[in-house]
Length: 162
Ligand SMILES: [Zn+2]
Image (cartoon, rainbow, N blue to C red; front, side, top):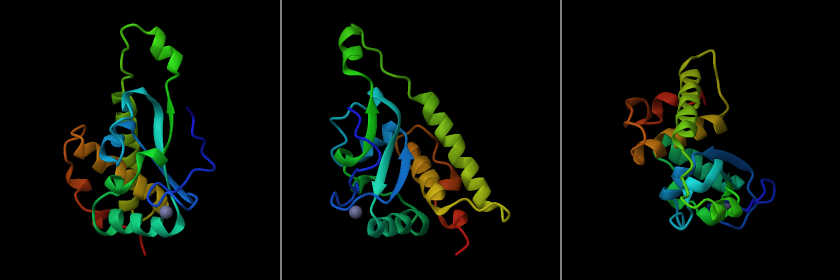
């Protein structure tokens, strides 16, 4: 069930090859188009979203300029993820959900570090990392995992020098 990381389509248009990728916690699947049938608790690791060059422009506008995230426009059928082996699910009578909270806490912490680095003149995280950080925090806030933190309400504070 591994979709592979190299030749996956853009999760916005589904046509072009993905040129830029960001990773989000599996729970974010719930915010995506067609995300409902995927059991996010069974995903191992993060979910990788690819965007083609032209859609990446849209994504960075949404995230960095408009203070939102692109997940509702992403097709979950086009993301890359790693599901727990099916046989494991079969043989586990009382199937326990993978605890996602640790991964979410780790991703959130890393995202905050990226934002802190962006706010600091001396640090300049790459734009991709900044977008990933903001999408991660906004998605987790929207899903009720994080309190809606004031530092993610708008992308303006975290804009890279342009
Ligand atoms: Zn595209």
